[in-house]
Image (tube, rainbow, N blue to C red; front, side):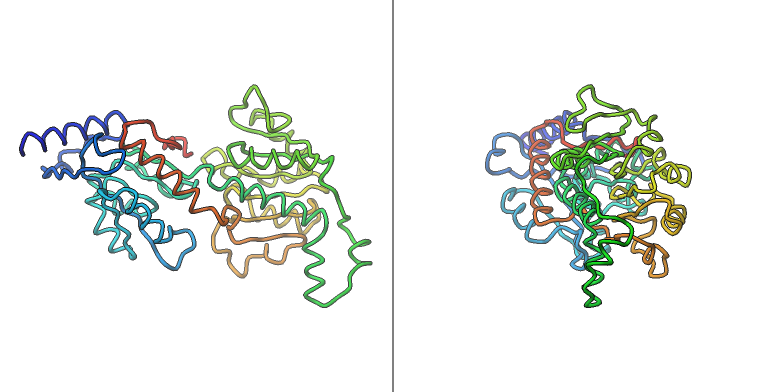
Length: 377
């Protein structure tokens, strides 16, 4: 290695160390590597020289995979960085040993031992549970997620289903499919028409999504109470933030109980038969967090017995939802196939976040949305 290449390698190592993105490999995973120096263009040309390999696993048949045109834009913006976009699991596994960064979901417990250079995983969604296997949690690899990119879509989805219930739009649509003029039935048959104004929205989880829901709900004249693990002194945009220990109280007060929390050991099965029994008979449950937050059997029983007014579910314990699942035909239920977070600017926002983080990585600055791997979010 000549003096210039040695300096490049040392500079790159120092830069990664300052960013908190290094790890010590066990002897079995260490190997001598040639130093490949490549000059970065644009604003980073004088900053450092390094080899950087990004792998993003893309399947053309799945809506949640990054469209290839966004990879092309990254290549144009960062021409000295190698961006691989494998189309199969086999191609992704083959490229993993050379990857410094993984954008997306190429890493699994089975292929993790081959990710010898990996220092950072940028996820293209918020949930991280499936990725947090023990070896990754114990490693020094940094994981960042897409927290915040879903907030607008999920907030508007939440208000949309609340308005559907209040105005019985889903029932009117059912009547339309039967070519039935159902004015009398809609006006006289329970559940009654409602209004959002003056009702209480109980939010479980108050991150970027919960905050976006709260702001929009208050614009409709709703009172917003939020339960979270660490309440802030300033409750805005909610009317009040409560400690998670008051969840039972919140459940009993809410006209609309909205779940927007991550799945952790503490939140699994959070809404069980006991808490469903605390809900008002006129209250609605909306789950757009994770399916495992709710005991689905207990929920189905509560719906069939009329102990709650209805439910809007975008996430489920098992996805896709089995055609034989009784929730499909439960009374006053709106089911959507895990789409609340998707929208026309989803990938645009996702790539804006990745670009900011990639620039921060190159400049040795802290990254956004770093996941606490032990906490699970």
